[in-house]
Length: 174
Image (tube, rainbow, N blue to C red; front, top):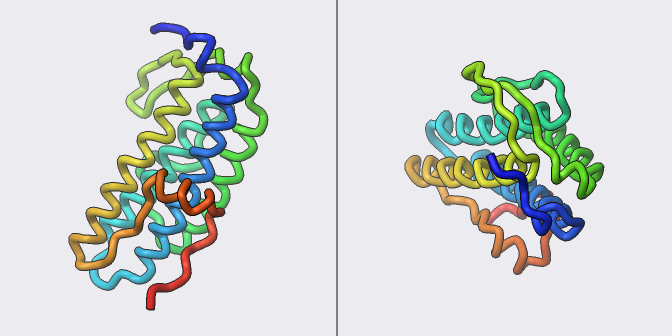
C-alpha cells in the first residue's frame, strides 16, 4: 500500500471530489427520471441504481467510522431510491465539505462485506466511490436500453458542458 503523493491531497483535489459528487447526484437524478418513464421490467435498472446508493452509503459509513445504514445490494423501489438518494447525497456533501488536506492524506480502516480488514488511503476510497458509481450507472443505462427505453445521458463532460447543473430531474421529453 502506497501513501498518496502530496499532489493528491490539496484543496484543488477536494474541490474536484466535490464536483464529482455533484455530477453523481445529477446523473442519478437523470437515471431515476429515465427509469420512471420506462415501460416494462425495470428490475435490473432498479437493482443497479440501488447498488450505486448502497455502495456509496457503505463507503461513506467506512469513512465516518460507523455502520452502514444500507446493505451493499439493497432492494429499493423508485420512491425509496429517491429518498435514499437524498440522504446519501446529503451525507456525501457533509463528508466532502469537512475534508481537509490532512484528512485526505490519511487512511480509512474498514472491514469489507467479506469480513476482510483493510487500511486504504482516503483519496483511493473516494476515487473508488465515484468510479464504481459510474460503472453501475452504465449498467443501469444498458438495462434501460434492453427494455426498449431511452438511456439517460450521464457523462461527466455533458454535465460540465451544461454548466454543472444541480441534481434536479430533467424536463420530460416531448
